[in-house]
Image (cartoon, rainbow, N blue to C red):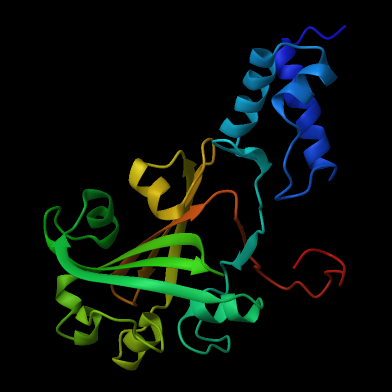
Length: 257
């Protein structure tokens, strides 16, 4: 006999069935009364098991509609190619990658002159409290919230690249625009971490209970100093990142790309 509490046994059994495709994304689970009879458990016990799956982001609940398996159509981002000027690109890197994946991109913008956060100032090597141009994007894939992207450009850069302050998108992408102004990004440093979302992040990305965010901080460098710091916040359940480094000619065609 399992030593697990009964509600965990219920959750584990349903999780296995979700993983094995018995309940596909978007499918409704049996009612609490049906599950209570199946597992010979009280409705409170069943409800606790279901609540555990909700907290883990596997299912969602709607008042009067029961429980539904969450859809997880994952978008894969090749982070080593993202913003790489050596790869063909139509518009900015986000639009290009999403379109090439057969998906539909959409984004909204906010541009402002703001006080540079300490975390960013440290990476841009500017004084904490100095000013920077913030270009903030709220991005969608097929109308589903995908990420937010906050890019800070140090104030000294604006004189050389005034379009950074324009309120809309820069059609060719900011990295290409800066390169056209003689400010070439020749390298970048990436930092990747995870945590639970803030209430504002959960609202913007429509994140359910138990789903973490993936934070990707990229600091871009010219040949003399940092020129931007970008913090991208992804929904942890809808995104996967990969890097391709070095000669991969030995890779099998059947291996993940």
